[in-house]
Amino acid sequence: MTATPAALRDVVLAEGRRQGLHRVGVAPIDRPARYDRYRAWLDAGMNGTMDYMAAPHHLAWREDPRQLAPRARSAVVAALAYPADEPGTVARYARGADYHPVLYRKLEAIVDALSAVAGRAVEGRICVDSAPVLERELAERAGLGFVGKNTLLIAPGLGSYTVLGEALVDVDVATTGDGSIAHRCGSCRACLDACPTGAFPEPWVLDARRCISYQTIEHHGAIPAELRDAIGDHLFGCDVCQEVCPFNAAAPARAIPDPELSPRERRAAPDLLALLGLNTNQHRKMVAGSPLRRVRRDGLQRNACVALGNAGDPAAIPGLERALAGPSALVRAHAAWALGRLGATAALRARLDVEADPDVRAEIERALG
Image 1: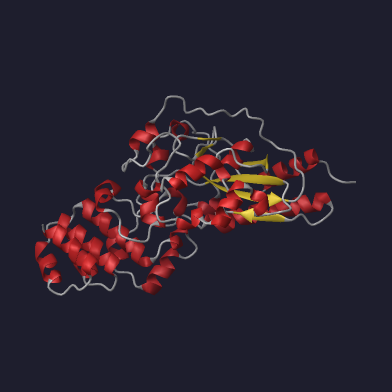
Image 2: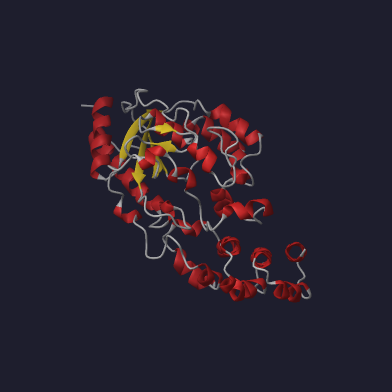
């Protein structure tokens, strides 16, 4: 006897609980209502240097997930909470194990459970930041929560400190969303006003080019000089818009976060000077099995230079001087900026005499000027 869509929905919910997911649901696979807004966002250039987001196949898949998984008929959507612990220089989601394989395994278990009940092997395209789908809209349709003004999914009673994943499956599963979770931000604009770099030109619109997470993770070039002051001590990502959200402050009954995502020792605020001195092998060991792998060594050291310059501690000068003489022009440029902030003009003048890279020379001259 073929399992009914309602029975398959019950399987998804039961296996999701068994896997320790904090929210799980099922959404229909339809054209996203926000797709046109996504195209307008791209047309405005707010994706910055993330050109892949505008590639034809990415656009096609975001507009219709069935082009990504042609046999898919339902979308299983899952949210996994990570610890909302103390502030630090690394975003909270990146302090523990890499959530991608963790969430992938849990979604894979749901697909296996569906196969056992459906009486056949269920095909499931699992997406954990690995395919271009508008996942927050899927999560909203599945009833997991609503998209807040900071563009993040907010799950009432849980907050927004969650990571999302989807399994596009080739069976009809009854949906779980009924539209009862309405947008609840009201007139609140705490997240918009708190953003250090003014990355929200309007509610529900994030300009990636001004976002600290984009600048410290996705962007591989020089951080714009006009944003460096506002970046403060952020090394990898930013949680400011979540820290001020009332839904996070008012969620004392948050479910216990997944233990695999618990912070590793000294991961909330790594030693910036030690990071500046890491060689390739040391860096590889530091980021192994962590979301920090997303940023290359010179990118993390670039970020560390900005954080040290903003900290204003003269004790950082020797380490920054070594970075100014290092092999990466990207790091040297940001070390020059930081040394200028710390008033280390002698080191800058000495480097200017031997520096060949025009971008680094320009940074040194600005720092001296």
